[in-house]
Image (cartoon, rainbow, N blue to C red; front, side, top):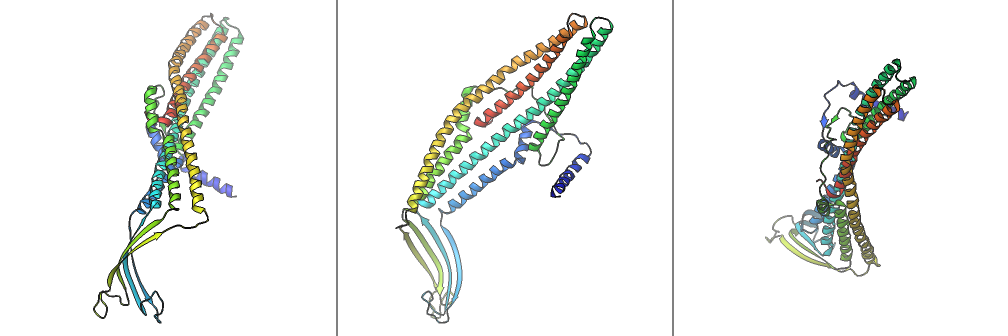
Length: 425
């Protein structure tokens, strides 16, 4: 029953969308799609919230380094006047106290919080670049699916034309009925290809819509720049960008710094600490500036407190060993991240370079396949080519067009993957 209510609620949420009058579909560029995905991505917004939390923790740690000022007012009534803490039957306290802790602990805590901000910022950048790569993949997959649907429709139109041609040639006694059957099969396969291409386009649009909009919305189109492949910078520039702007390295470095600060915080537990207090106000039997004798009740106090750790059953030393091990692990993780960056940089760049280089060949193949189909079609109409040659030429053109579109997507994805290491270029 509960499941039925959920389904009904979901369908009810969709109903207004379907009932709305058709509106002009917004046309999104890749830049606009990326901006919308960033605004609606739960994972990325979670990373931003984590960064904000780390900044708040840094502010709190910084406050621990600075003097604090507190003002307290209290009245104590002791009818017998014999408690040590009381100066008489009535005692009034109204004081402002400045307090300051001096030691390694607050400093190390602030440094750890500072490293935590750097760590959260690097994690947010990793989430952002991963989201951009995903959106880029889905964006160009949707564009490519539209191209493939166009190719499938063109192939269907050509197949129907060649079916009509085969029927005319059969009537003229030029070809056998087998050619007509083969042409009919080609039309049927082309119709199936159109259906599959429509389904693929729909699935691609659904996947992208989930990333772009906070509510269910399929009323959008994309700016088609699939044929406008952007350039690939030289390897030297890519290496420089990765060296300066790689979030995985920044994350590992921040984690190492935070682990080192944690060791210092633990060591602070083994050292003496110093506290300074300065207060000014009233501590008297009367809540007044002067007493009955005319003497002032206002005064000040200054206190210096030194705390020396003596014995804690080895707890603080165990903390030092614990965080020292974690710091050693963080150092190894940084080394691994550096090696992984070098490997990924070489691998991703090689993939992008290969994909970029193949585009020229794929474009030539597509043009040659179109010309081949044109020539074979002319030959078939004149009886100089067979139906098998015609079908083969038509299939070759379809494959060549789809391969070109797939190559464009592959290059965009490889380029986006490379940007996860370097940032935008």
